[in-house]
Structures are given as C-alpha cells and as structure tokens.
Image (cartoon, rainbow, N blue to C red; front, side, top):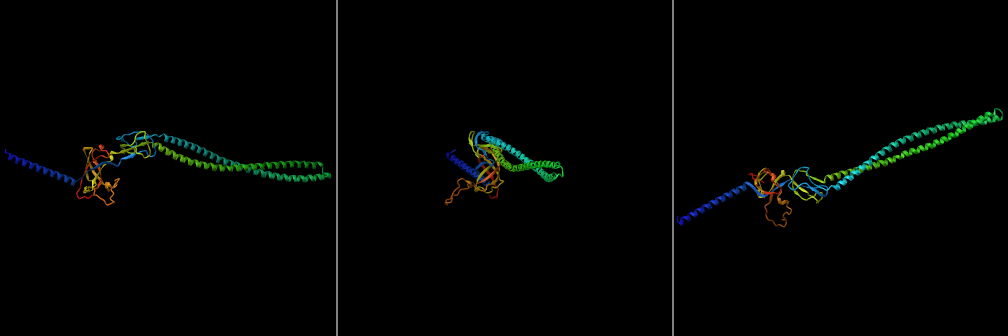
Length: 387
C-alpha cells in the first residue's frame, strides 16, 4: 500500500470518527434537551420534616443531673430524656404540704369551737329564759303573798287596838287582846320574811338577766369565729393552689418525650445549668420526612401537585426514592431570607427566583434518611399545565 493510499484511508477514518462523534453528541444533546423538557430537574434539594421538635424544661431551672439519650437514639412517647436537681422543688412541696395540713387542722378545730359556741349559746339562752320566767312567777307569788300579809297585818292591828280598848273597859278579857297582839307579831315576822324573800328573788332575777346578756354576748364570739374560719378557708385555697403548682414543678424536673422518633441534636450535657425553655434536645420522627426542592421559576411550567418525582440523595447514590409533588409553596425562597435584597435605590440585577416545592416520599428506605441531606429531584411534567 502506497503512502498516498494510507493517507486517503486515514482521512476517511478521521472523517468517519468525526461524523460518528458529531451524531453521538447531537443525540446526547437532543436526549438532554428532551429530558429537560419532560422533567423539571433541580439539585437544590434537602430532606425536611415537620416533626423536628426542640424540647426543654417548660417551667423549672437548675442543674442537669442526667441525660438519658445520645444523638441518634430512638425515643418513645413518654420516655425519660433528662432530669434536673429536684431538691429545691421537693423541699418547697414538703413545706407547703405541711403548711396545708396544719391549716386544715386549725380549720377543723375552729369549726368544732364554732359548733360548741352555737350549742352553748342556744343552751344558755334557754336556761336563762327559763330561769327568768321562773323568777318572774316567783316574784308574782311573793307579791300576792305580801299583799295578803299586808291585809292580815292591817286587820290584826285594828283588832289589837279594839280588843285593847275593850279590855281596858273590862268588856273583854285581857287575854283576847294579848292573843291578837301575838298573832300580829307573828304576821309581822312573816311579812318581813316575805320581803326578804322578794328581795332575794329580785337579786336572782337580776343575776339571771345578766346571764342572759352574757349568753347573747357569745354571738359576737360566734361572728368572730365565722370570720376566722372564712379567712382560714381562703388561706387553705391559696396553699392548695401553691402546693399543686409545687407538685407540677416537681414533676417538671423530669423531661419526657411527647412524641416518637430519634434524637437529632443534643445541646448540652449533665452538670450544666439550664433555664425554662432552654433547648435540651431536638427530636425528629423518621416517618414524617419529606423533600423540599427549590425549583427555578422558569422550570415550573407543567409542574402541579400529584406529579411523580424521582429522588436521589447524594449520601446514598445507589438508592432511588419515589415521590409525589404535594404542594407548590406560595412564596419564593428569597422572600424569607434573613437579609433580603434591597432594590429601593433602583439598582436591580435579574436573578432567577427559586420556588419551594414540597414532595412526599412514596417509596424507598426512609430509615437511612437524615434531615438536611441534599440530593437531586426529577419531576415528570404534565403537558398543557401552568405552574
């Protein structure tokens, strides 16, 4: 084979290779363009979860004595996560419990005293009233007796004077006048005794009325005791509320999980001083994971909720996840940026905005996924749809 022939053959081979390369490149370009027309593709993708919850002690502060979970550990609802030193709260609970018990004993004693006061008042009232009534009747009887004695004494005085005059005139015997005088003396003594008895009855009546007044004065003691009981009941309500608060604080010294999941982050360690609402753990539920894809605004054409999506995660290149568009969020990612662009001065450079698209995971091993992992999403467009 001559050199000229070899040269022509080399040119032919080079031309063939060039043509094949050009055709292959064109085929790849056509396939790429077609793929981009059929699929909305973005690598601005991350794994997210609505159940990422930061937990801490709600109402108490103190020194952390224990932390039961490490990052990545599974957590069940109600499971203990951490505890703080409960000594101050326990002492407060014990003090309030003792004060409440003492106040209740004092209240019970005051109620017993009130019952006795009311009973004694009623009894003394009845006794004094009966005694006064009895003495009034006695005074009436003594008055009647005194009146009868006064009449008898008057008659005997007249008889004595008459018999004395008759005896001096020797019309009757002196003995008759002496008998009348003796009867008069006896009636005088009875009259004096009746007067003394009436005076004694009057004194007893005055004493009985004083006792009645004393019984009535117990009413003020009853009113005072009722006031004390009301005040003590209010104090007991306050102590009971404070004790309930102290017991809630004591229970709050144990931090438990309100949900199932895994520990995504542990923010502190045993021995640290924590305050209410301070973050202790972040918990995530692997069953509640989804994908957020930030799709450029010029790629939204034909993308709608319900569209199928293929998800690849950079950390697991051998895994493919099936997904479905759940929602196209109503604002661009830049809307909520910490430092949004300021174009008030009139200076503006066109920047393609990205719209968050929420994609639910319909298939694949989600147990390996972690919140925040990145990847790539392909969303199958539907024809004749507007974003």
